[in-house]
Length: 348
Ligand SMILES: Cc1ncc(C[n+]2csc(CCOP(=O)(O)OP(=O)(O)O)c2C)c(N)n1
Ligand SMILES: [Mg+2]
Image (cartoon, rainbow, N blue to C red; front, side):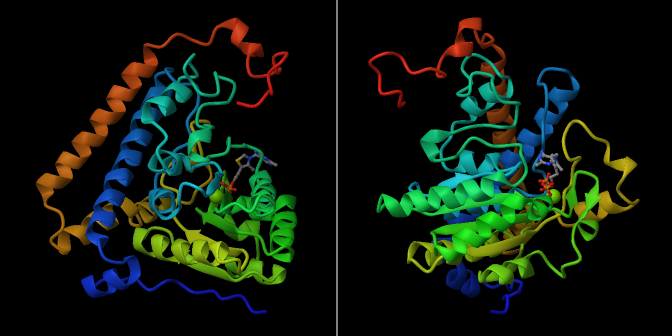
């Protein structure tokens, strides 16, 4: 079968918005902007704290907020998220507490992972957000396993895998897409193409005309989506989730975005990105794009925008203050949650 590669048309008129997002779309957009603004504030603060030596590591998702927030809003509680490197906002939108996430970033005693994972590798089981793996691509085959489990247990829900452009060269990409399609599982493969795998530009990663075309080889419909447009994300992901939920099997979405920050706190992109890349990326800022559209549609005033920014900064400041005051994990906690206690089921 031929891959369906298309860009979702941008809905600019209110009538088109109603068609794409349904009634109540104004509230959906307001909520999306609020979350995207929070993500931006979080990234800015945490990158600063990392430079001050207060958190050990940070990987920003700046430029990718529309995908994560769109996914957080489009998925249902019964769905499962198998994140790539930058999907923390999906967990937060789905209800993971910002304070718990801050505890994780500071690797303190109240970190749900008890400081065992690198900062920015959260786990949030209460919102079906599977512990993030740094090993590129593994979450693709994990998602297929989760989807198979959903089917075996006759449960509702869709497994949603996120991965970068770099992961499309990993073995798990082939194994996951192949098995997901053969077994027609309820899984959505979301490739967030931020055009870089650390220092490797996407054109050196693959000669394929788009990453979406790759899914044709597995019999999966592929679609390239403007990942800087939250409306396009909500619409495309909503359709793929519906396809999976109704038993029609997996789909593949390539979200095209621009990485606006370094890969992580460990690299310097001025050493490998061409001059002008940062300006080009900034011109595709998803947060500013949504704010500008809402302003032009009369849904947002400059004052309301400022208040939104203030609320985001305050939430981040408060969460950091709580986390930074928490003690580090105690040495005995190293073996907690590792061995089941005698007489316990080990579950929990
Ligand atoms: C199997 C494996 N190989 C190499 C690495 C080192 N590594 C860490 S991040 C990364 C690039 C990932 O790029 P991409 O998949 O595009 O995700 P992005 O960082 O752009 O979100 C690499 C190669 C790894 N973590 N795992
Ligand atoms: Mg990438």
